[in-house]
Amino acid sequence: MDQKLCKKCGVWKALTDFGRSWRPNGGISFFCKECIRKRVSTYQQLNRSRMQQKRNERRAKNAKEQNKHWIVQKNWTYTRTYGITYDTYLVLLANQKERCQICRTHKSNAPCRYMCVDHDHKTGRIRGLLCHSCNSGLGKFKDIIPNIEKAIRYLTQTTNSIVFPIFEKVVYIRNSSEDERNRSLKKLYGITSQQYDWLMEVQQTQCPICAENLTPVAGKRRAPVDHCHKSNIIRGILCQRCNSGLGYFKDDTSLMFAAIEYLRAPPLEIEMVPPKKRKTEEELIIRKSQEEESRKRKAEEELVRDPSEIKQARVDDQV
Image (cartoon, rainbow, N blue to C red):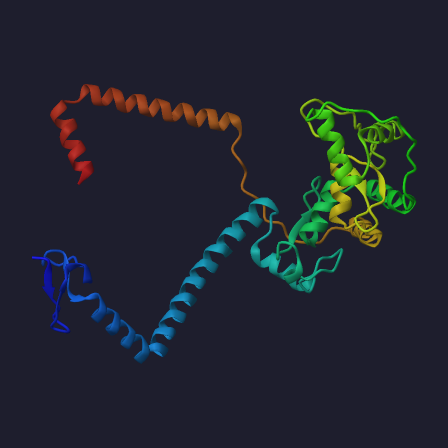
């Protein structure tokens, strides 16, 4: 039988016009799809405000549960990493008026929309809350004030474009590594690989800021070319850390001076919560050996026991 009577409209229709049902009636609904669609539409029009209210209550409940779990997770993270609770973090954020201590960017306008907890990696003392850019900038310069001062001098002294000597034109093998490197330098910075190598010799293969050795290593990226993003003037070749540090501080010397003052300020007087001590290797080895011994002891006990008792014990465990 390819047709069925709809109990709502009383019309015989094809089975494809009915939806599926879990009731023992052949797996087909009593009402056709058109009648169900009309009934749902009528109910939504008559109970629109009630449905919206229930939807809002459900969203508020879910948001409350998510916020509760999020606070628990944040509290655990701050306690484990920095030795403060989430409530202490909120107090620090309120004292700073929800702004970064270096660039004074508001939390809502920060790159990650939250403030990072900045601390001294040697003493573990908290210095304040920073945006992601300023915190990463300090990390790239390793919290070393002389490096930031050298970066300021580097930016103020390299205001004019570098005058390159004239080199003979070199023809590279097409699609070779040297050809791709030459085309990439021309596309990004407007220089050739010969000019890059000459600039590296002028700098004595050292970073002008941190004096790191920039000698190319097989399998690793070469040192990046530092340039002004406004005027496209090439300033030199830096190591990856210093180049990223200038980028995080937006090549702004005023932000770097503020960062120096921030580093020179004393750390905050905050009551630190001692983090949970991680287990040493010896403790882990002892625990592993104890687990192996208990496993062997259980295996020996099962061998001694009667097979019927073992079977009955397994049944009891399943119950």
